[in-house]
Every structure is written in structure tokens, then in C-alpha cells.
Image (cartoon, rainbow, N blue to C red; front, side, top):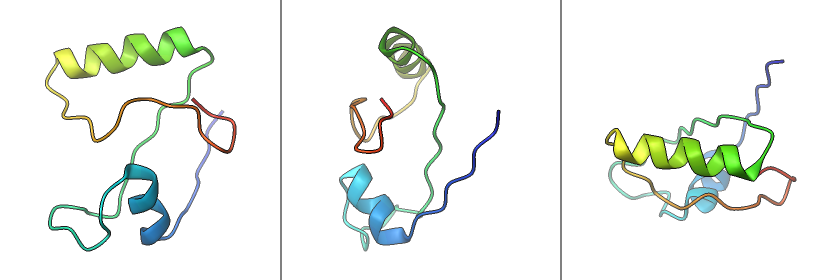
Length: 66
């Protein structure tokens, strides 16, 4: 299943916890949907080990995602 969700720049910045006018905020986010919190934790840990620079820790989203 594939999902596409479009949000305005201010909503994305708010969700990421950054200033919308900050240098470096491109107004783009990428999400990966999984079925369990355990999968979230594993994928997040792997991404960090491989060099990702997280903006925020995984958290339960208001729309029901993790």
C-alpha cells in the first residue's frame, strides 16, 4: 500500500520542531510506515548507526502513527 500526504510548510516545521524560516529546512519530510513500535525503534537505531542525523526521536503522532 502506498500513501501520499501533503502538508503545508508551517505544519511540517512544527512537526519537526524547527523554525520554518531556519536555514536548512527544506520543507520536506520522509516517512516510513511500519506496524509496531519495535520496528520503529529498530529502524531508527539502524538509521542513526548508518549516519542519519535525527531531528527528533520517534513519538506517537496525533493521527495515530508512531
